[in-house]
Length: 638
Image (cartoon, rainbow, N blue to C red; front, side):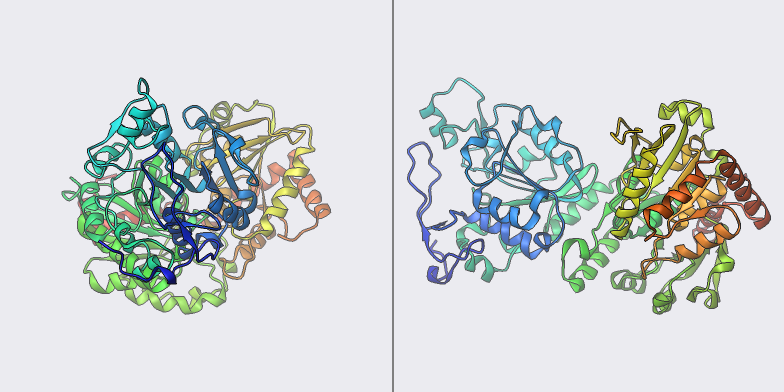
């Protein structure tokens, strides 16, 4: 079939060249095509498709860590320009490249050297057919390198006749005849590709480039029409890491997506489920509150749909989880994103026998409102207090929920936000904590698990993982000051729950992992330095942990400054301004280093909790309300 567009009107979207030539004839390969290669940058159809999809999805304009195996120069030069030091090009033979910085990596033996969940995009084109090892194991290891929400982008050679492989014993001519090229050890086939690849990923059942780009744009960048459909050498697969254990075809068609959804929910329909929807991105406050409630449920199964990059917290706890990155992360058109969100929620509700929807986020997305107007099940808005005034307009969206719950604030007397005059019909519950003080490990147990000497002075620092770049400055200053203390050991709580011990010399001598939630180990710490978000603030005060709060004063954040001021005035914690000078930070940390001050702060926390007359049992009360009052479940006697 002839292609139905004027080849004179096409141009390379990578370099702008309008001249296309035949691939150079090569006796060592049967994979040659006419009039498809850019004369200037030498891009082929698959390279132009990858570049265009990444550009249209907004990935080229965002901070992305990119890992590129066997890098094509046409893409490598552009990725270097877009991503700078966050672009990493690798090949088994770096000497083949000139002008592009490439490091040596053997995919069969060196992938263990790369850190898991480190990259946002991993790309390899026509690489797997060269590997004289288990290509499925290589694919699994590559998939582990991706962060949740990341893209695994690749293409493969295809020949008719079924999958073929031979790692040794063939001559050059036999390899050309069987695999299409002299240095190939395998070849894939459109006849059984879905079956072959299903051991590693949910297979794409068909390939349709028009679901990635418009027909007009495919024509403009020189993708011949006969390559728009079906499995072939320039089919490019975009697989999205939707959770720590699940990778799915990106932009899959609705029928295929529903088939996967039904498979995922197989056997769940006999249980009543609660769907928890949370936001967050790099933070995890909303997600942690929802987990705290979910873990108090009795006969109801929790399901999570989250925008939090910390979806692995759910996986570690064994919860069913679905990741939907925010449109700011994907660059997707907002109208389309909201409609897709609504479809995603509706699919989970219908397939998962969802009988109540719980939403923890101050801003109510249009896609959520659309679903609340369509479905007839109870809904709960977990509405945190301490709002900034600029969010007052968000309150009106509460009319779409059948129930609004606001967890109490220990510093509530300082709250001057818009929620305090909007309490009609709002259910107040005690503070919500994931880890109650009585559930935490003892000092000896916690220190034994962390490998910390019983007599060491240990500080925990949690100042990373924020959108506010000013935190990186204060974080660096705090770590620098503490690293100079000869008798202090510092554990930095990272957003992925990895802790890093900073030696007195600042060399980072030891690293470890605190399972799931760090506050289980808080008795091991003599002091803590972190933000004053809802969860951290209440975990610290109820845990009587000597603390320096560094409140996030970004205009769209909750009023962390008021929480920190309340704690400071009640002698429960010290406080450092986000823009404080190094000398001022050192003065406060010097005070926190005093054993007497630590004891005084700890006592003041206990006194404030006692005088408040409240217990951190909000999660249990919300769970009981959901099951008893909204779902009509028989509650187990306590």
